[in-house]
Image 1 (cartoon, helix red, strand yellow):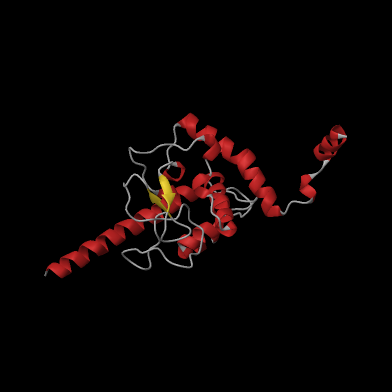
Image 2 (cartoon, rainbow, N blue to C red):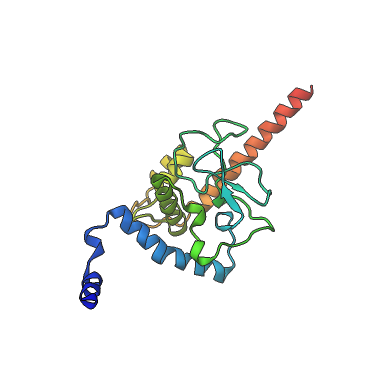
Length: 206
């Protein structure tokens, strides 16, 4: 009797009952993340997003904070999400640097394989799914078979429009420059906000 039940379970096609989101999550955790972990460890690639010292922030449901104390402010793990409550910044029109784009410190400690997606997870399904798709989009230049243009649009809409107007633009082809281009955007924002902060201090001292 048990063998018959086991045989039926093995022959059961989960694809028939799983939603598209469920299929994507299954692929992400069973295939994509393990492969990403192997590539990162092989190349000794370090990124704050995969640090075990990141912990959930109590100020925003989509934010994480540095348990090592290197960074004071909380930040979202990845770009691409339109936040209901903005993270406090020096300037209101400046987006916070996601952990994916922050510089790692000497306290970096890599998450183990079985917990490599820990900092992406959220009890809110929409936030978790956004994180999974955004990571895939940044690492592969594709997300669910298409360019993750929505990520760039959420960070800098002018840059997104300029990119899509280029003659060679093709939404079905992997974008291999997305990480470098977004990194420039965040670096420029940081320089500008730093300058604005210095100007504010100077004026208050006069």
